[in-house]
Image 1 (cartoon, helix red, strand yellow):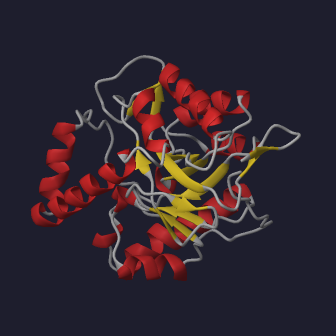
Image 2 (tube, rainbow, N blue to C red; image 1 turned 45 degrees about the horizontal axis):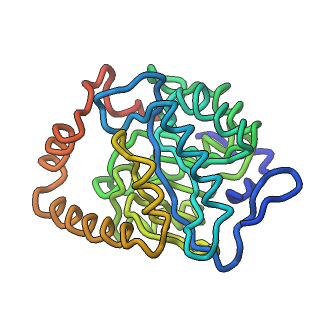
Length: 280
């Protein structure tokens, strides 16, 4: 098992603009966390792929939203899985705008799965001031794990990241957004201060332990993003109601049937590699 060393705390994502161009969140601001997975230079039929030009437009909209008044949610940016586009496409776009994001890595995929970052690329992200968190070891749904598997997915993943980066890892993104009280207790015991889901809702500036996010798709428009950030529009509340319906459907169908339905509806591309990473 890897051993943590040279631990340096990683700061929270940074609505006033500072002299260096960064932003700080006003104490009264509510945040809305957005979730990306993969970026490409060309359009894709897979709904979780965002084209680079669209991503850059999102960032410009987010920059503007951070300067608006009390009725606008403060946008935050996250990525799941650790796809190589995080460093090749997202990082330059973020750096050009002096923005930071949090990148949650499926640790067992790093440097072992085609299309995903290697450790030098992860270090490049970290050295550029981007924030790194864990997304498990093998992307297994944590609600399916026994105690030994939970240890691997949570503690081994965290310790490996800390060993590779020399920095404290205190945030975790839940694979598939799945959790229950047992999983959340295990996350706390494994040393995570904040756990991110895929349930969309606003969060206070002083973040709670469990944090919701909004999963973005290729058909997301700038107009819909603007409405979601406008707390008066009702768009986010409508999405929250839809998500509750989806959660009920997951429980009714079960994970296996729901996963097949999800893949068909989201035009998931065929896997070229096994979904699970080898255990450490």
